[in-house]
Figure (cartoon, protein in one colour):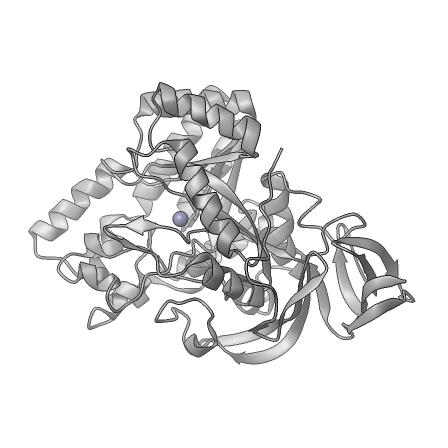
Length: 457
Ligand SMILES: [Zn+2]
């Protein structure tokens, strides 16, 4: 007798899809039976539905100080949004300032997350300084706190970028410690130069954000990081890749033996740069970096997902209100806080515009939004798999649900939706976190602050 049985759904187990039952004991999966027949105290009927491993978002910002303000979500609102959208684990970026000590930053973020997270969580730690003290603390965080991934920015000149000297030394450390280096790849000097040029010409609206950081700037950043990975042997992970030529640089490096993984994020897969060109400053809602591109890049990214050249899908959730926060950039697009929130919509966007259109297979969606993330960041098979012994993080998914994306359905605190009115196919019907039902049909039913930190090895 199991505590809970999920009955009669189409189960996406590793390497195998079949109709059957899942038996849950406590926090974990106790048995999986093709054809069904398991008995439990509580039955969840999944007939006609898909049963997926809980989704994992590899790229989330919640606590994000920026220009005297902070991203508008707290851990509670962001993770409630995540859970109703089927995401049971997030990897948040710890983004300290250049004067902050890494250990203090880790403790600050972890404390906030423990107080508020409703889903499970772990972190990428941004490295924005690399002096002797920082190096010592980074080593300690890896050894003692289960940190397994760092983040660097090639993009923000004078603010968050580190020198090439430091980058090489950091990558040697990553290689030595077996840590994955995640990276925002855009050439900072080129972006800075283009921004100053446009502003001097009076081109200050959000529509100039994309031209100030075109595809070539991103491809150059990817190439730079790949070159250093080739020199050092470090494992690298390119976050939020927006265009085909940037993916191509990673494919070439991979062919030379570089251990490189490429991430896409939901906004780049479904929105194009015409959104950022909308009148009356409306385009500011659609400013993120790298920017939204021409529609042709959607095809390039979906093809890359289908081929495996891009292997994960995150969100880069970074919620700033249109009124009062994006507003800070009315005089200059360079001052618009970056972000197009999608922590709740990610899986349904990928299902609607990836799977239902035939761009990718259902299994590819499961791999990119869950399994591959767990493998890349050392949480597999505790997370990212429906198999005996794994955490019972499970999504019963109604692939036949039809609706539209609406801001009013959102649990994030942000005051707009970048996907308002877009067609939606699919919805997470029942979401379980470690065996407990935490969301049903778009409503959060779980326990506040019920999330756990997932240390990694
Ligand atoms: Zn980000």
